[in-house]
Image 1 (tube, one colour):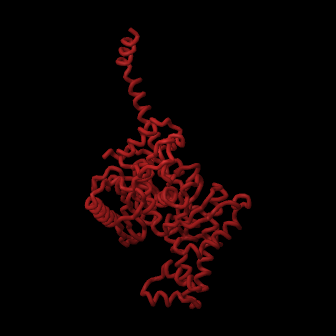
Image 2 (image 1 turned 135 degrees about the vertical axis):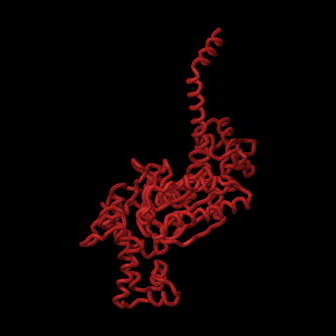
Image 3 (image 1 turned 180 degrees about the horizontal axis):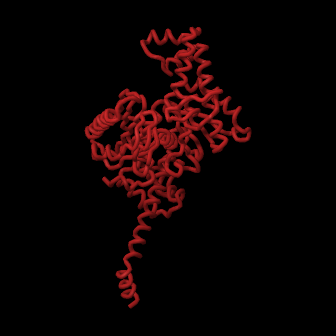
Amino acid sequence: MCCIISLLWKQTNPTMITASVVNNTFLRERNLSSVLNYIFYHKATAFRAKLAARVGLNRSTASSLVQELIERDLLRETGKNSVGEIGRPATFLEVNPQAGFIIGVDLSVDFISVLITDFSCRVLWERKFPINSKIIQADAIAKMLELVKEAIEVCKEKNNRILGLGLAVPGLVDTNEDTLIYAPRFNWRNVPLRKILAESTGLHEIYIENDANAATLGEHIYGVAGKTGDFIFVFIGKGIGSGLFLNGKLYRGRNGYAGEIGHLPIIAEPFHNLCDCGNLGCWETYANEDTILKRTNARLEKKRNTIISSLMAEQHAPLSISILKQAADAGDQESLEIFSEAGEAIGIGIAGLINIFNPDKVIVGGPISISGNHLLPAIINSVKKHTLPDLNQNVEILLSEFGSNAVVIGAIASVTNQILSTPTIVERR
């Protein structure tokens, strides 16, 4: 009789059943994520019994979750070893690089870069097309779509599925709507990039991210900050941006726009320079790539004793950070002084970030990082001068290993991050 009453009660109260199903689905998703994250970030192989203990699950639940992740091709078994349970060999597990392909796109001020990687971020294909900030919006988007479609065809030829596409852009991004709100250097506003990509390619898993935030995810997932809970990534190119990784996750702020440190007003000289955003005295006007090149040109006009001009002539190339690096590598005093001045200005801003956030690490990346060995000593000295002594003692200031690819690797990481958070977006084979 009790069973009949209970059944009738449930039939008249479907909300309870629905809530229970939702809770169970959420719990399983969270547990799938925990298992996948453990194996992803602990690169050493693991077996089921050890995994269950490490993520706080019983063995049967852990085994069921592993089986589902294998069915989705996100994990694979790699063989057996006698270090498992007594008398029984353990089957080891690892993240499956062949789970599918990820397409990453960096829509930069200087170029459009597109990569295809596997699930372990091994680069399989890449294209880069030069542009400039004056390019017409429709032309830039058309070229981006052309390169993305070429990448999709490559994926089809290699006969593997596409796990997702990540696009990184230099501006404010609404990550809920996947819309570019404002890109100061392009002067673009309210561009529905996800909608444009989805309608053109037919892809469903598309993620739009600010370039510095993307690069920050790249450093956390694939780079030098994999086991760091509090770090700041400083991206330096035509502009300066940052990603704030705090308390184990990317900090976005109220509207998702946190990290626009390049537009902090600082006093680095007796006068304020006009920034592309329309304000005066922004940090990036003293420490970005364009500023370094302008200061170099000013020195060249004064006929300073330097090999910079001869390097430009020999290579039939315009002045660039690469030319300056070559000169500095050869011991050119003018180039070394230019990098020292730039490092001083960069360090001032980084010191402010350290005073505010007290991170474990600050990682400097972007196009400027190719000359990092010449910049880093000046940056570190500047930071020491402008931070509180107790705050700078244990902070590591490092260079990104990804160089000019930091952002496009970050675009790849934005897809990986979503899969690690929600493994069920990847279908079973």
